[in-house]
Amino acid sequence: MSAAKTLQNERGIYVHIPFCKSKCGYCAFISVTDFSLQKPYVAALVDEIYNSAERGASADSVYIGGGTPSCLYGGALKEIFTALRDCFDINGNAEITVECNPESATEAFAQECRECGVNRISMGLQSSCDDVLRAVGRIHSFDEYVFAVKLLKRYFDNVSSDIILGLPRQTSDDVSRSVDVISEYCDHISVYALSVEQGTPLCNSGYLPDDDRVADLYDYACARLRVNGFERYEVSNFARNGKQSRHNNKYWNCQPYIGFGVAAHGYDGEYLRYKHSDDVRRYIASPHAEYYELTDKDRFNEYVMLRLRTENGLSLDEFAARFGYSFKDMRGEDLSKLIADGYVLDENGRVRIAPRYMFVMNGIIEKLMLD
Image 1 (cartoon, rainbow, N blue to C red):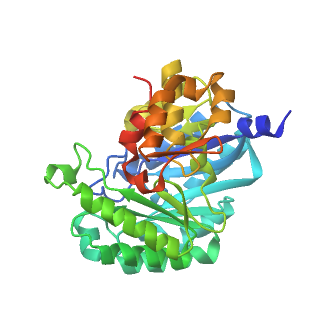
Image 2 (image 1 turned 90 degrees about the horizontal axis):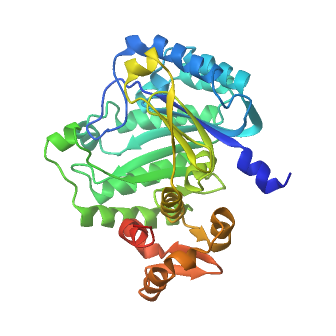
């Protein structure tokens, strides 16, 4: 078997933990604050893992996300990782990530993660300004973040953090301070533009970020990150020292991954996807997923959208090998126009968004998708 085929067969595993101490004002993810559901939820999760149709598959990445996995009861992560290792062939060099928030990134959490074989932590900062944090319902301070990241660095070499651009009261000084403090302790940072989703407290308050202002903050953050030695590898993700997120790269490269838990999705790397219920109690009662098949058009559009989010873009040879036809045969006229207008580059058989247009890529990518 070729090395490329072996790599394709290595799954990523995602596990969703839907518990938070409180709900942030911008959050549209599936999360709950009722901690009485934690033990029955973990029991259902473990049951789903042991009954997985993909049991026995090889995996080279595990990502425990949320929600806030660090607010689980002590021992819960051990239960989850025991089930994962009983049921899957997890590569000895696998990237194993757990998300956390500063207020629950305790010594006990760090110790349990290390005992479980975790080698990467992702922690949300969002802003270095306490007024901004309070305005969006974050329950930690900037000082608590600094304390937590110092603690985590005693246990883990690979720590990532994220910030959000466009929050109420946010300034360029806040963004600069956030980037600089993360750069001091971390080799990976995610920089997300605020999306105000229906039903969130921020949306109900009537707040909307100024798109031009957010674009300016993004350009400012990118410049600051370059000074600090980071390279962008996806529109919202930056790394140095080879610390790209291997797990998230699976999503952007349309590689297979397995999902467990409420609202989690999975993908076989070809036509088959599945998704879980968005309701925590319904998941506890029946921890099963619903399967659906992608159409040829779905596969084309997903691949184009995800690959063009990355700095490397879309390889024309890889596209042809995956789909059996040429990308230019399908979208050559639109591609040529975008190249002529300077929005897209075609360099050595690799199509990518011109760097200056990365933040406004959505409209460009839509022109290369199938109607």
